[in-house]
Length: 429
Image 1 (cartoon, rainbow, N blue to C red):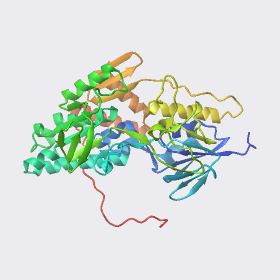
Image 2 (image 1 turned 180 degrees about the vertical axis):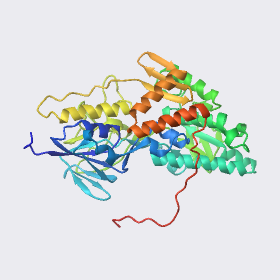
Image 3 (image 1 turned 180 degrees about the horizontal axis):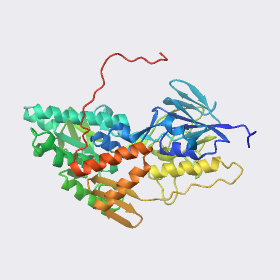
Image 4 (image 1 turned 45 degrees about the horizontal axis):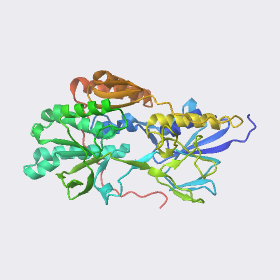
């Protein structure tokens, strides 16, 4: 085994799938290189808590270099950079800083926001697909509250205190619930010059139900929980445009607001491909077979949210959640670590779905079992704590959650903005 020449495995993305693959693959057979534009692993299910000042960004992020320094990753390397082009003919990937060759490539880059072709929407709404986007959203939410507390113009004040969340999936429900808690429990204490009735939290969803990926009981319970938190839930509202602080809908209705939080769609992370005409499939996801091999490309695999594997049970592909990425990473690691054995096709084991609406309000679906309320909330809390990387992060998050649970105050509503100067120059320029 020791005399066998190692092959080079390049993994694009340090998310759930990429890290699980790097951890479990046999490093005596493979030289593993993880490429990511961030030098940390993020925990997407808690982006909304950063955006709502419930957690600090460092609590849901973990340094990639510290992670791969552990024994389980021994032999793996991390390269900082954003992959801009994949040359499948030359078997290399290009970042803005370097070119990295590979024997086998795994695309595990996840997804980004999908704006469905609405002109300039990306420039006007706030999003929750990264830690930096969550920080930006938090700063702007705090900015609106601070400015509204000293504003005397009724029209401007109403616009600043209207927060619209677009999308009724887990991310939309969770951020709307967090804003609802802010309105109901925190506003009168920390912003006494603002009447809670002045603040509007509106969640709009284009279909007739929230949390459509979960069961009808969860959908109904989420709706009830949000309304208890004074969130105005509007179903069957299809967004048409957002311009000049005016949110337009297909039915002709309008909402004037300074703050729109977009959670309505995702699409695969884009890459330029050279040396092949193969392109991603629906949702910019790479079409793969049961072994996660990208169809039409040699020695290229895709796992996680960016992989589209269809079968009779999942005709539109697997749900784009962390469990799929983790299981795909583990299965591919096992196959690549046993080149002389028959590879094992991927089979997804659904461990259930969950979403939180706020303190003591959550929904959980595990098979035919449905939980709601405090029990579901504690189940949600435990699962998310266990999935976080790093004991420090778990401890800090647990303390923050317990403090918030009893005091309704996380103490993190701090408005930090980066300085404009000095101007930044890239070393390669």
